[in-house]
Amino acid sequence: MLPNEKQSIPISQIQHKESASLLLGCGSCHLKTSCGGLQLDGSVVHCLDFCSCEDPNSCDVVCSHAPQRFVRRLNEVEGFGLDGIELKPAVAWPRLPVWLPIIEKPMLGLNMALIQFGVLPINAACKRTADGLVALTASELNQKFGGTPAGGWVLTGVDQDYRIEQIWRLGRAGRERLFAGLKASGIVAATSPNFSLIADVPRSDNLHARKRIGIVWSEMNMAGLPTALHVNARNQADFDFYAELIKGTGCRTISFEFATGAGASEAMDRYLSRLARLAADIAWPLSIFVRGGVHRYETLHRIFETVTQLDTNAHMKARKRQTLVPATGDRRHRWITDPSIALMPVGEIFQLTVEQCRQVDRFARQSPKLSASPRISKLRVAQVDLSANDESPQLRLAF
Image (cartoon, rainbow, N blue to C red):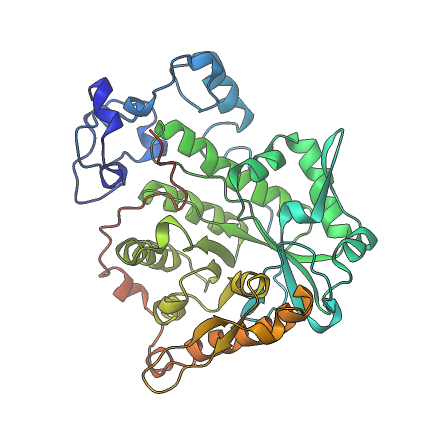
């Protein structure tokens, strides 16, 4: 690819598509076994074409154009396979509702005892010290959020990259202390961090992120935290990596995000096909925690034993002082600004929107189509269209 071509290349041309040709540079690449190869449209010849930094030594991408850093980052994860990941049997998963509200920040007026379970971003359950992140104690969590949900806290590992990377920078010993602290503070379940598989970087950076997802999931599991394995993937080799990790640990719960790059209609179909193939490759039923994808419950319920929605709407609608207008006839439900609650504390509004969002979720799950749809069998999964473009759910679009 010519230097000036990268400035104008469409995002659609850097998404993995099985209908596209394998990159010429993949044929003799030493990472082919781990990577599986990329199939992209356009004029890209090698994934290293995405290396655009003027000074490789000042860049933090895992790239062989900076050999010393590349070797150091490779060694820190002990290669791109499963080596170095403790394959301890997965901790048993607690019984949780199929809809859980995410509480991003403390809210004035919220009676936490009325919330059955609350979901926090991992970093919200931590504090920064001179030694990095440490877990808040149960009393500190209680004080910060004005109480504790009746059933306890659940953590989500989906967050902005700079927050997630803070967890990795703790090092293995620091992460072990963090996860042990979270367990001691009463966290009842979690999803592992979603280190990003960015599309417009050399593929080695994706493999490094993929391995870190596996390592940190294993560390959380070793700490005794029931943890869903977050699946961030671009091609079949990525899904195969997670499948092998699941098989080696007996993991029964994964997580996935449809809220960003995978949420577009065409992309969602492709990801659902990949997820169906992953589930079919496992000898036991899998459950899934999802963000987004509500309108595809029918397919998700055919693939997975249980589907749990981590919902951000209740928090967002409460802060906007909005209330739900239920669906009537052919008109879908909608949210409107409600002057009658404008002066209420946001926490009290949140308690209202929690019930309203739970109502919307319950309605989506009661679809006649969903209840009449059988689980997808292994035979049927093999016939599903797998021409997925498998772009990362978190794409870096700035070239």
